[in-house]
Length: 417
Image 1 (cartoon, one colour):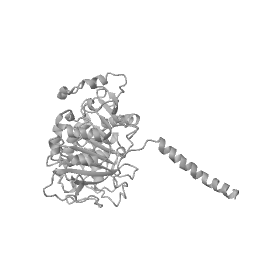
Image 2 (tube, rainbow, N blue to C red):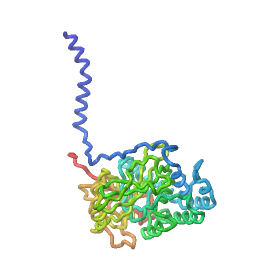
Image 3 (cartoon, rainbow, N blue to C red):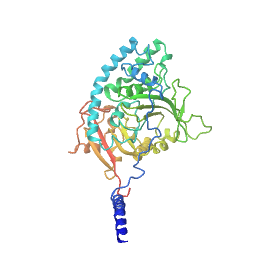
Image 4 (tube, rainbow, N blue to C red):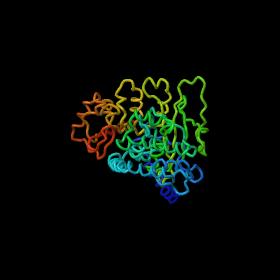
């Protein structure tokens, strides 16, 4: 009998030790609250690129980006034309200095944002225009990027239906629209109103495609979308000759007597080189002033449904310094687990030290003359401290290296969370 008991104790001892270890671990580890957990988007795998997605979009993106056509391109006769060769030369000249700036940004990101940039949280980029290159450089692994502005997102372009004259005009407008961001790192608002609203270039989606290709992404598909009054995403497939084979979004049908106006947008899905993880970018076009959100009230709920975000603000026209943009400002502050911005984003006074860990980079004294009345004396004081770190690239309105500023703000959490 004693031998049986001894054998039983020997057999059970490892399980008891394991149970005790689990209890100790649970007691000592800080739990992850729902507010800290990042939601999964439904589709994780890029699927079979050769069969699940029409290659038209990737071939078009490479054409727009001034890259050599991939073997077997479906744009035969378009991407080997004389105008395509000239476009490649023009794009290469503009991209070379930008590539150097982005390389410096990547080096800085890896050193300073190592705790956040690899997280796959949704990235929120208010007042962005079609600026994919900066946001993807800072947050390369995110599942979903949400951008918005007043610019027309446009319809999916079918370049095969354009005459030679129309194709030449199309490329010329693409080059023109890229001028400011490649030279200054941001899009000029007044220029975008002209660049993305004309017969030759219907919307900003061609620029998004071009930037994705230049960043090495494989573009899977582009879909016209609508954010309806229920704060859910719907698609319009019948405007697209190359609609996704797997139509994962419900078809949009206008609701009668809807409380909110529908928000137009585009969705582009893509994968990084060597990865099977599907990523997606959403761009919405609407007015996010307090007055505007009285008509588009579904948007805050949609952002809240994404879980905590990594947020980026740059060249944001100091709009959230105004009382008339308080709703979007409060939404950004409440949803952002981490926020990176220049001084044109949200004033420093909204980031109290007891709520946010703040790090300052670069230099700050006075905004550009257009916004000279937006001087922040408390920010100037913060930049006079000894803990300010260097910024080895230009970004935002003060685009010259050595004149730019960025603040990284990490939201603090109590032990009870």
